[in-house]
Amino acid sequence: MNMVKKTTLAVLAFCCMTAAQATILRVNNVSGMAPYASIQDAVDAAQDGDTIMVDGSTVRYDGATIDKQLVVVGPGYLLNKNGLSAELADAVINNWLNLEKEGIALIGLHINDRVNVKAPKVVITRCQISYDNLEFERDANNSIIHQNYFSNAGIHFNQSQNHQVTNNIFQSMQVRDPHNSYVAYNTCYGTGGSFESVPGSANRVERNIVHREGWDDEPDNTYSDNLLVDFDFFGGTDTDKDVFERTMELPDNAGNVYGAFAGTDPYVLSGIPAGPVIEELTVPASVEEGSKLNVTIKLGLQK
Image (cartoon, rainbow, N blue to C red; front, side):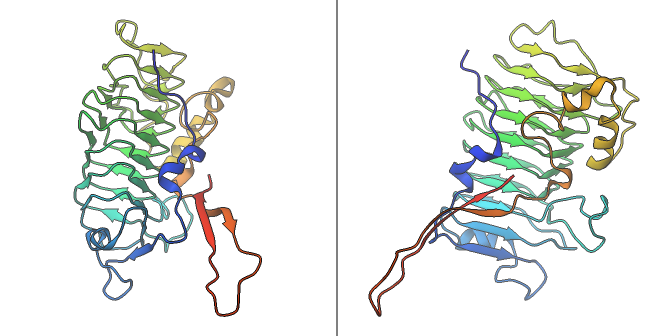
């Protein structure tokens, strides 16, 4: 079985690396606060390899069709509910996002509507997904869905394949119809939820915290070492901090072995995006007077 393997954020070089010539475009939907007032305006102005920074705002953003290889970064989510700051605001997107180019990355956004994934090699990490699904087209393969908070939302893969779904929190876990994918270290916390995953085929499903068993009668997938938790254990809590605190109350150190807060690259509270780091810097030792100083900077995202 050519099973997709576990991958950490450190391996997201294909979407998070950028060169010195790449551009950062800032978006703020309060008039005059930034060069671009909408995500779509910034997408239209951007080139492949650029980064779009979306400011937190009390006004919700419209959706966009992203047809270029871009990294779209917001400030995170649940920032005031978790006591980080009463003044911080999410970047809430209130209409559909259409992802139409290979290698797009969404980081630190609060997406309040459907995301239509129409291209492969998409990364969605440290986002809150609310009230609708990530909807994949059949040939939109090889995605990474990592460290997200799904409130009343799920993922429908439509038999697309080779995905990694890891270290996410689901209010009601719905991971439907993937093929040859790795679904691990996720937590389902909603009292009315269950692990409505797969059925799909050739998937490996392990180390999740779920509300029910019943996978033994699904022979097309491999289920290994998942933790069944009573319906009333989490109590339908509505912040990731609450889920974390309850997870740490599980007996026998189970919270460090199963679910979103376990594994080599665990869930990060509130989805605060990783800050940029310089991974490579090339500066010439000297230049002739009057000549340009050509500096090459390669940036990555730290954990």
